[in-house]
Length: 263
Image 1 (tube, rainbow, N blue to C red):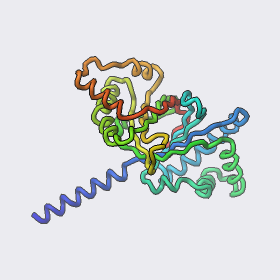
Image 2: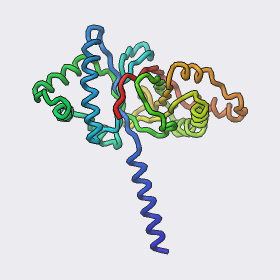
Image 3: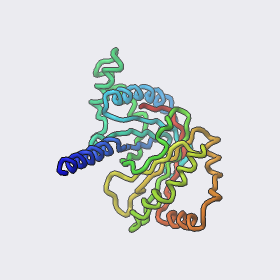
Image 4: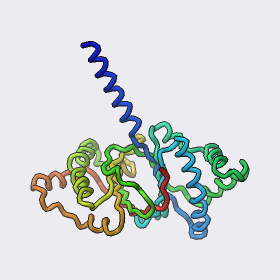
């Protein structure tokens, strides 16, 4: 009996460790690029993509996305968004230093020395204004079998849970809205959906506390999804949706197109 209990305990620990290893931590970096820097930044973007691919190959990151923003908060006026994926919060907070990027560059660009790589990476950073950086952890994801590729669309919805209703909001997303998104995916109206919360402490004046990411394979799927209405939903389910909406404030929505992806 004791042996069985030990085996069950070890299995539970193993499952917990596996879950911890699979959890995603994401860094969102919103960029502004002045008109005169657009072409240089596009060139540097291609240069940096290879560095992030090498970082992924070495296991320092889980992935990297480069998105072109089509719409968002007017006062923000961001042009691009990068998303870097990590498998633990420590790596996420440490990020990729200039020294690490140079070391990746030495593996990828054999004809460039340390000084040339330093200058190239510095120029890439100077060509854009890193306006906002957000650290997030993934809570729920559905549709992970969909493979991201350039051209897909995403809606990044920034939410702020109503003060005092934090847990109520997350419960609503998991128990009320998640089934709706699953149904959309099953009916080819959405590719993937994710719910994230901020990974850093925040106060009542925080810009946002959560984010949902809605991925669509093309504009046709996006617009069909926008017109979707679950006519089979019961009155009780509709009331649950309304209550869930009241537990958060949808601050901003950014529509974006994927241009580069590293996995």
